[in-house]
Image (tube, rainbow, N blue to C red; front, top):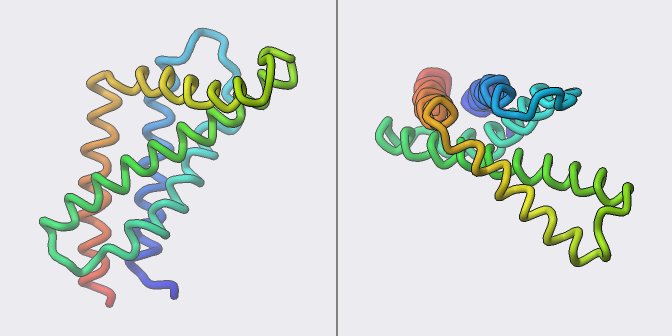
Length: 146
């Protein structure tokens, strides 16, 4: 059931996904084609905000901080998984894997490699502070418009 808090959460986490992707771009190797990287990450943020954070409102601001952080980490997980699967498929069409099992393991290796790139102060700041702010805004919207 659509609610104001779900909509606000979806918009807040879409914005967080876009800002995090924009911040992450400077850590990618020079000349990496971006395509719709920022937009896809924002779409993942929209879905995660709607499905996860939108349901966790009206429990208080302290719980909103926790829920906001958890939702931000879920956003990071799904974005890493989605892009790792995409890059694995690109590599597999170039016959860079010996078999399907190596390709599946390659997904998790790509997730690990890109995840290591997230452990820098400005990326952690964007994800953690953005998650807390989005959680607080969602809680405020849930209390105001429910």
